[in-house]
Length: 293
Image (spheres, helix red, strand yellow):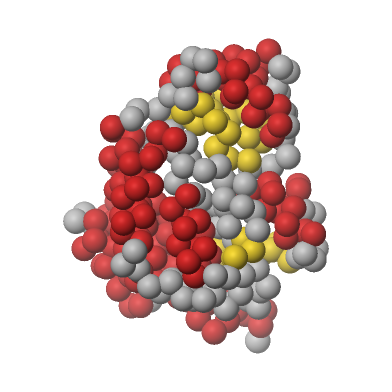
């Protein structure tokens, strides 16, 4: 992932080199060659996705689309903050490397898992988690759309939630292959570690507001940004609510920057924008730039 972008730009290669030094591992080899099992490790997945996204922004340079709001799902919030100048690209890399390492350590310390439910409202899944909590920790972790909610917690708690979701008529309720219980209380040690790390990171006032995962509200204050990045580790990602916020504030064009089209697919169903542009590969960047000529 991202090799075409890496090969195209010396500036992009500098970013990958920085991440490799911070990680103490060759993120280029892991991103471009795998194996997939290694790339799927939280410690490597997060920097790899971040670097791919920052590479697109680097190649766009002054051709970055004009936009009114930025937002990113979970890790993607760091890309959004880099896009609006709240974080330098270098500090975004350092912060995400630290975040990923802390989260992997928390996964080892407090093993857990996640499951996806489709076809139930967020309120219904919240009620299911409350009942399943008798078996172990479980909370709604990702409100991805009006009918897609991911739950996170201990194995017993998540398994109980899946059974209850099926009983409640979910179209699908399935365990996910993930490294741990992300966006749940089982990540509390990572939250505390990130709080300490971010104390030394410079956060600038963003040029455009960022819609935060934790609140699904626009944020401009630098200390609010710092606090919400910490809270995000154990709080749900309110992406469905973020899309509603953007729709309510007149957003009709979507640019998804980075690997894949997952967020574009969600936006197409939930927001029904006038246009969606995916900027993932070098071909995507060149095609978009060509349209501006």
